[in-house]
Length: 79
Image 1 (cartoon, rainbow, N blue to C red):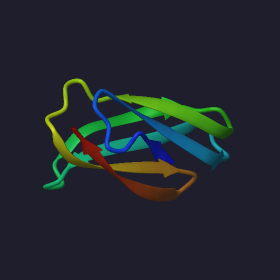
Image 2: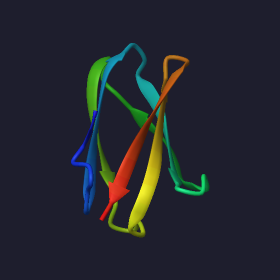
Image 3: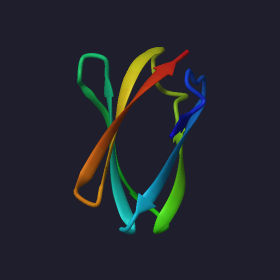
């Protein structure tokens, strides 16, 4: 789950069902260019990650979450 969307300064990414202590998050712009690639420590089960958007240009971004050999992509609109 990703909220708020659209977002202005911070977006919250809630991840549930994780059975590992570490996830990878890749944020790309609308053209597929990587903006941020980070590893985050998580709590097994459910975690919330705050994504700081203050240095991002306004536009559309794709957030790819990789955990437990699975991935999910979220679309984020930054206003």
